[in-house]
Image (tube, rainbow, N blue to C red; front, top):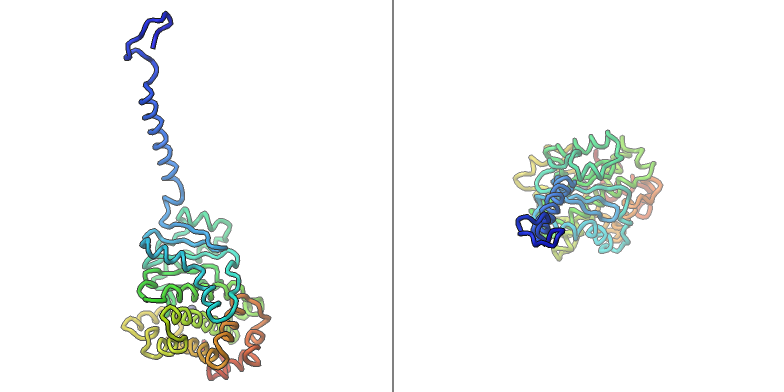
Length: 324
Ligand SMILES: [Zn+2]
């Protein structure tokens, strides 16, 4: 470095920073501003990671062990489609509008609508709906007593406890995904005629069929994963002391649900009776139609199997009306 007269200046008087210093300053600035951007981004402030799966928003809690995350992302929602195919029917298309899945680890307490990642994806939902999500997440025992999952009555929110699923052993994940996706699609796509029947005997018939179809797909998926026949697994699992209903914690589990163990056993038995009598494809077809909403009313839904939903219940569940 020289001054204007060409006199060489000592290094300490050189007003320009040394190239190494510039580099260090640049790196520092990049790191500094980069960390601010990262800290302010919804992903880093959130307790969740977000995945787009078809038309589903899938949130996976950051507490979930990495191995379980990979297994879940592989199975969701693909295991539901596989469950339909395995019983010989084409699965209804999985995208069904804005559906949201929360895959948590042990509880749903961190499903918070003020979580930056969650709130961003729920923009545009009504305040009533958001309050509903918050209330569901705050429930101590939200899951159905017979599964590690819960689906909102409108079918738009699917809560899945991956810690509970892991405890179910072989086929538990496939069964839970099939169970939840079947409920979500059936509820979200129910035609007006069925949706309007939410109360009274016909509403009870829809809910009973919804449960029978979801349990059927779940049991078929679990049976396949375990290499045994569906009817054999279902009969053992839903026996009074079977793995789905027995166990030390059964009483506590069922205390949080208005439906007793007999309700679920009867729904599973209805599906099994139809599958044994008419074939698994016939029961699969019923589940697929329910999940795609392609029926006019419940009598139409039942028509390939019986002359109406009352006849279907009478023949395969022993009573023309569904349990409440
Ligand atoms: Zn269910």
